Image (cartoon, rainbow, N blue to C red; front, side, top):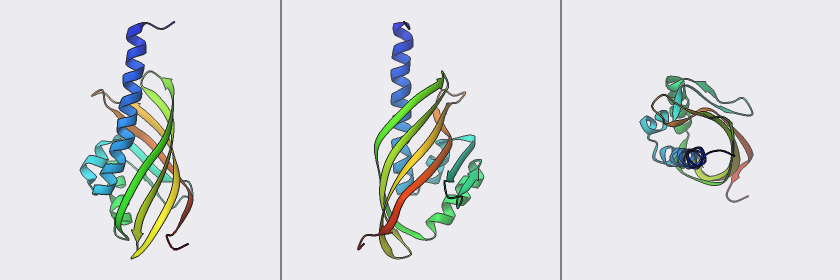
Length: 144
């Protein structure tokens, strides 16, 4: 059995990863790219399962988000369930279910998605996204 100290650290790590996921939604909704980029490792990757998005490294990620924001108005992301598996003391994988309300090219849209994540504890002790892949279940006008 693991020591009490190790068990407490795992609980703290789970909470830090949960906080990371929540911070991402607020950073995206606020369009705070400085905050958002600090949530990724230096070599972090954000991509979509359909291949439309695939940025690696903070500069490329920021450019990718700026491009997406050009067609988006208001957006409101909500995370739901999260599952985390630790692959190492300093690395974990996760699944996050989510939905968002957005205005894209002037049209109100709703989307359901799931993120497939890889989290890494960095040298400063913070957990960050090493890889985040978004899978869309649907992305459709609210009227539909």
